[in-house]
Image (tube, rainbow, N blue to C red; front, side, top):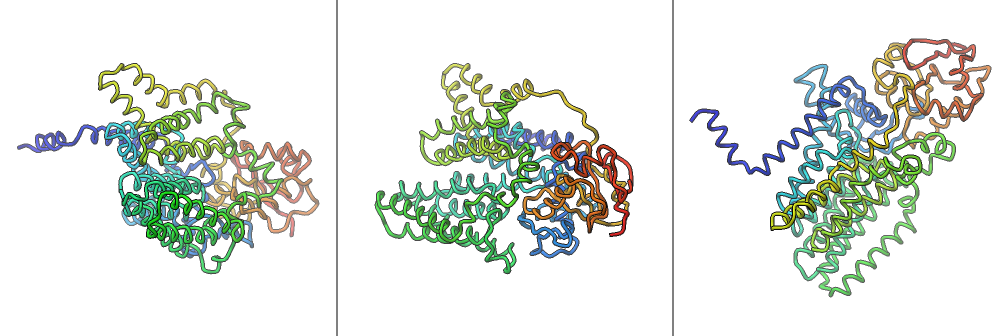
Length: 577
């Protein structure tokens, strides 16, 4: 047999659904690689969090301790103690270390391109696996197709998107898939471990993890006579009580264990996980009836709530409360992704509807599917949660869309099966249009505003090259430039787009908004701004007599000398300090 004939014979044995799924994944990855790959290769990473992650990984690979997650080049000499986790640094750092020996000099750039795409593959496969568990292989294939077109989710996996959001999507989907596909202790333990890793990476997924924990507990309370339900809650409880403190100990320095933290995993999260996990592991041993089980779960919820309110109130405080009213008004209040869909609807109703359409329709489909019981009920709870979170804050739409894909795929498969059983084709066609992403595309296109050219962006290597070659110093610039300045230049910065950098951000805003003084601010070597940034216009409009507005108008204090060239306007502080 020739090699070609042998290959054809092997391919012919691959199930059509699996082959179609592989093609869909390959197409999604290839399109993202072609469209976004060149920008990532050129270190044009767009979002400031990507630059911050790159700077953090470089520092770690450059010798900074695993336990030291401080950005020492931020707000010197204080530095910035970030709320980020080393676990989120692992994918990029591992790829860089693995690639360097084979492609010297370009390993980092190659890692920036491939790491997000490598995370996309398990995300799509997990969506397909969950949908398959809900509605069979056709549902899994439909979920692959929907996932490959789900723009709000895909933007978290484009080349250069090295922040932790893509990893969080994979972890939440892994927790759900474990419960859907693995009955008993194995599924419970798998869901708990994935939840523990997700909690350690960041707290954005906490509402989903709470829904998963609540479902596991209530499923046992209602079906506790079923051995699988008892085994699931037991496995979940044991794994949660072990994994959360283990990961906490592995990523948080001992000196910080007692700190009260509401924006990263802290003592309170560990206490709740251990108490709740141990209770869930012990309760199935008591052989309680259904009513007693329901009472026990409710009592556990009250105990955990009391534990939080009495000992760990930081868990329910607003994570951005430390920012303060000035930064909230001038900076965070203008971050588009942190706005609610309802606020966005006031100015662009069609675009707002387009953003949540898919998640809303998928939530309705999930609730309808949940009438059949089983793990479909869990997926319905999560889909409704996803809709609420996506409407509350637009940056949550990436994960919300990812969670919505499996029930949407299962709904399409159900409509097709109804047609195959002799029904009309029209319901399937209508469902394909309504559930598919066409409404999002149409509504978004109809609401798009004409582009406004406000100048060249400054967060690129070419834009910051003139500054990068100057002697190292401290740069004072608006907040949103902080990440790219750290990653693309050797300089230190005062302000960064991290909510914990309150001192540095307030210092930067105080200087930029105050009238130019006769003497330069101490500890600053360079002052700059980007004309194209919205933050620049906001600050100048808010303080028309301030230093930033003066620089824009050409009224330069005598202690500043222009340096470099390009879109990022830069001055060197020349007067003696």
